[in-house]
Length: 274
Image (cartoon, rainbow, N blue to C red; front, side, top):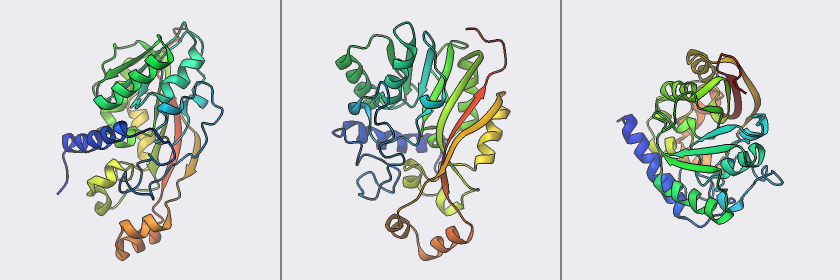
């Protein structure tokens, strides 16, 4: 039985609320396997954040699939919005780029994550960051108020991606842009994947084909869509075999089903405000 969008959101909310309550450990917190408790969960970028300006270890839950700020071309004084901000990792990294005159807003639908992020901000004495509770499909952000939107391995978990991109378009200023790291699939996933709620919360069945993802970006009104970084995510063999039946494994191999980490940028048409 297929879950409704509300049920899928609740599955994701509960899973990430559990992660927020755990002691911080980027090495074992990644939740892209079948269970957050499994030693086979996938940390998709390893130690890529080492040496990154603004990095905060307490905010790194090992849930990233890219470093969106790396390609976002952030400038001093900008207002930046991070979607699915978690414990605040990319908010704090973005803050180091926009400086004291800028503002970085993090939005997350999990109250426990918001609490953890606010605690991290308070501990660091940051005053130009905000964390707001809300869903990406209904952003608690004023229209046309944001210079740059970033996000890291989150939109694949959003049931209504068309609405999500429409909301990103709404909150951006004319000439504003987004830079989003996300997970996409090589092609449409079979129904046996789509029907596994646990796989959805684990970054698998929430993915859509890269071509469909880019089409949604353009349908939302964005121009200049570009994949600026891409790599295949290698699923550990033991996780592959333990999560799938023999028939499903054969289908995955025969159809060359795989998922990829991509970082996508695009621009909202209009004259640059800044």
